[in-house]
Image (cartoon, rainbow, N blue to C red; front, side, top):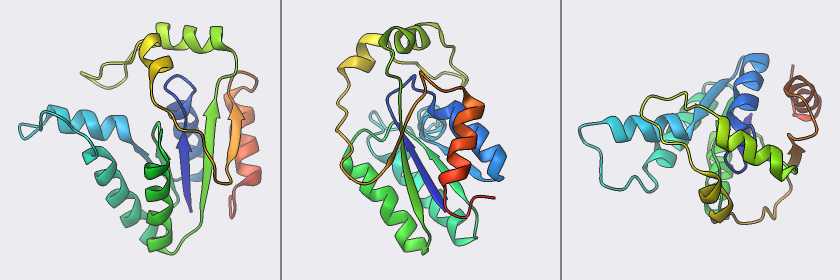
Length: 168
């Protein structure tokens, strides 16, 4: 199964993705890690554009074809990338579930953005102003919405495990 996590920076995607991957013994594929590795490369282009997503799609499909559960961790701000993730699952012949993480408490969301530390060497975290100005298209397909302002990580993992198909 492919779990497609999305949401603005600071909503808890990576925290949830890591814990869910541990709980399900799944593969965690994080766009930020891939894109920073590309930036660190001697072959790094001036603009990364879709390169990180293309690498992630290929890695996800390889692992799905091996029968592994994959947790895709990215902002996923536009329908184009969401559709591409769904197509990865379809090509691999597996199910997918889309999960959008939100933080309804703006003060808490801002606090998270302004106090967090990068966990990837060289990665530049966005400012609050960059987060609120970001293009982020509304989700229109069936998906699960989880508000990380109101639930602790453990409760979110329990909730996801209960609603994901074939979740042990």
